[in-house]
Image (cartoon, rainbow, N blue to C red; front, side, top):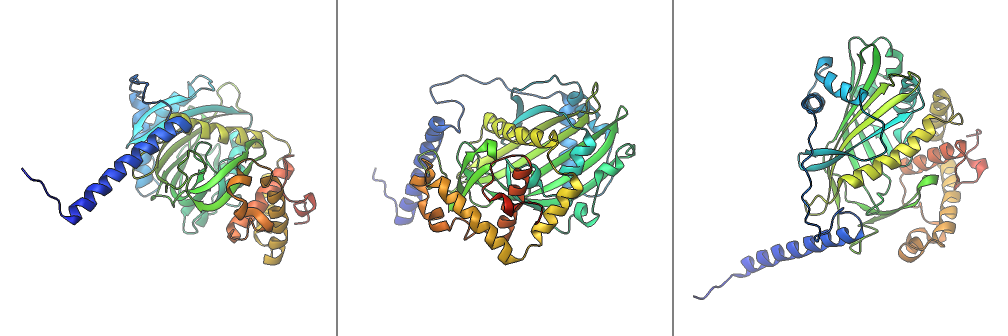
Length: 406
């Protein structure tokens, strides 16, 4: 029997074959270079993970409430989830989560030596951008102006001790993450967020629930230069920095998180933080993110967050908010002068860096590193450099440029 294919069918068949081959290359490459946690030679079946029913039902209720509308909230529906967090044992290890809508998940627990009021005054303050408090995981961020949280100028900490009836806020944010540590990519995406303050057994609890609104922008090549100094490189070039397949267009398809803050039972001056997170990201619909990658990112977040919340050097919330406002109001020529210094400092270290000097000289040479930065990104640099200076970190702008005369 003679089989024939017309030209269109040949084209479709060849395209399908190419997708299969490139997908296989993608998975194999990241098995070797760090995205996949197991290789094809490891045939071990991983035991299916599950959460206690009250915990799973509480998480389901939170995501259903996030996708709905209104301010009503049934505290009893999340009592099992809060109890689970409240009774959890301290651990520095990855906590496995079951998959959620094809996204892999991981949880992390930490205790911060700061009370809930201090945490809320910084992290859920309309006048302090998240990237100032989460410098290791967020490049720039902001609330959309029509968000309830912004429109009401919400100050959740003022309701501590007065939340027998849960307080609820909603909003929509944008974020650009810092480069991930396994592929070197960074993305811009929107998040719908639900915030709830309530009582549990006489103690204050704060819940922050988020879900990605749409697919992210294409991943851009970046690099974690020095995570301890909150120093990252952004190329503005689509692709991946690591893995040998830097030409690939990758996306964050979906992300979901539930963050529970509760006063420590034995030490009310401390706060237990428990993060449940799911992520689906990759290429051509493939999810190449593994639980260990989510956990590694969570640990990066936790180190910087704890450092800031527990430090006596971090300016008081009102002072930090005023500094942010002053930087945001700077005339363009002043921003340009400071960013010019920043670009020169980036060029100095990049020209000696083994990866940056090899792959990205055209991005930073001749002091042009930030030439294509938006004002939003430039303001983000200045705010972060100010925070770094207060914390004794290595600044890439001369100290006089980030002192209190801004």
